[in-house]
Length: 95
Image 1: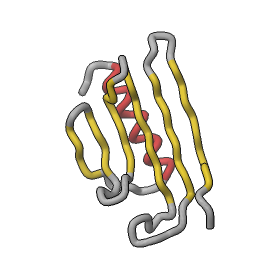
Image 2: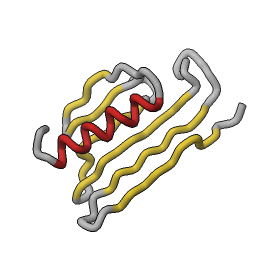
Image 3: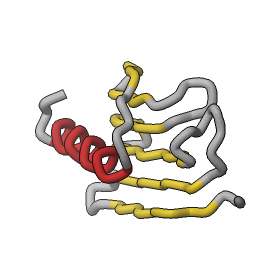
């Protein structure tokens, strides 16, 4: 199976904030047991404020500012929902 882009959305807001989500279908392996790779990011003034990804060697994790923490992946819908909830928290000054 070849790598296939399953989902892509990029929104550049009036103030310049960027919300970008990319999810690919990849061959299942020990490193990608779900058969997915993803990168979701919220950027303001060129700085990543929120990021979710499953980079090789790190597994599922998220970035909140300069902090990195494991992320419990439970599916694509939950992933997008959790990411967008963190973006809203940042926008409201909650994180």
